[in-house]
Image (tube, rainbow, N blue to C red; front, top):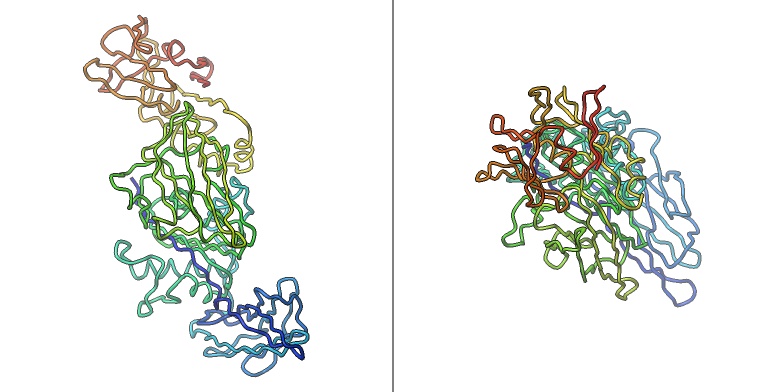
Length: 544
């Protein structure tokens, strides 16, 4: 098993926390207030950083004038009235060292407001963040956007500043051989080589990015796409993927270290996001942990593997007091599934989210119905949010992810279709792989031919059909179970049993090198599925 350790941090990387000021009115005796952000502050690593000032909240909707000085000299910037933002882009590189910015804001009928701040251009600064990206980076961004498309969210754009921050942090982790079991992968120590900022927010500023930032980091030995998939599967790390107001992303892989930086803005409208996505027909059945923080740490007696986690996120303002009122997960028979519940009450890493983890792995190729009901504050009053949705688990591991990344639009369309869809499996009897819903998977044992009859390993068959298999040593039989159908494939006599009723057959199962092999001609009798032998292709096609 490939080892993965995931760490996650979500924080506001706006350069200064929105600061409030009272405005003295002239000549009337009344006061108004406004809040602003000014940037950059701290240390920047580019020679021509954008300098800006934004009124983030104000009871006054228009500004009479705004002016900016850099190191005492007035500079001409641009004002965007819709965002109430004034920005200046230096035409020439700034000198390395400390700089001071000052802004004067005038509202009609009020005394001017003057604010000053400083920043430092690093001695190691580059002219600007690189704007060329490797195929690996672009493929990772596409993989992230596949998940966002599935959940009805807008695509992220790769951002040079965030990518620079991600790359420099991944290099820091690699160069310093950070011990992932001892040190947070989100923090940097100023005395170590490659230091650019202690927190993700400071590192984003260093690279010239001034919006909010959420960071995912993993230590992973698989492919770059698998690293994205594993981050999404881990419930805490799934959260940045699901931010409706996210617009930008930066990605980097250095050695085993994978860094994703998500850039997002504040969002006023409250919106409930649920995952697995409604209608998804290929949801994984299990989660095996390796995440920091450990999502089941507070649940006594819980152990991995658990079922695939359900994550519910309430975005927007006023959702800081999210409470879980009710949650339920039921299978196709209406049986309730035990859930491990993480909420802001028992999990210090949650604020506007809940994580609902099935205590045991889910069953493959099975329909489930989820229901969640939350309450949150809106305009000072409690508001209720609830949603019921369905999803289905995949019949075999990795089929869903492979199909999603092969064509996210088609995958999304399939999720929007009502009801279940048929699965089609094709076994090549002269090969070592099979096709399941268009995805090629390896057989663990190649088919064998005895006296002109082809045999398949029962566990390959079960994996392709989303079934479960156990060996009964007393009966010398492989017990195959799916959808209420239990088949005992006896290996010492010419019979099989279907739901306890033994039936004679001219093509019984055989035990070969401790593996139960099933003759192809027996499949049509017992599976309850449409089975066709394709002579020209020397293959078996099963539709279920």
